[in-house]
Length: 83
Image 1 (cartoon, rainbow, N blue to C red):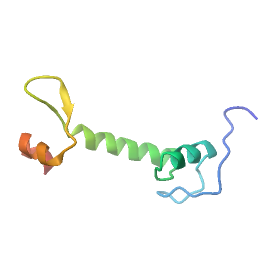
Image 2: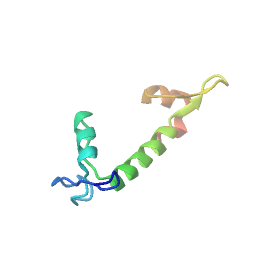
Image 3: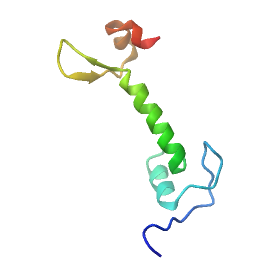
């Protein structure tokens, strides 16, 4: 068996409900307590998360852009980003 062969589990992706979850992906997601997803659905979710987080990056006092995790602080700094 080559390293390109994928061993799929009997588990369904929690997004598309298809049995496309590989054993390695399942092991990784379970150990990190993540939602069990196939590669395609996980990629879509990751891209959505990147977009969401990009809207929370602001330059503070003309310095390096900083990720603002506190939503109340984000509202104070730039109310347009929270609507």
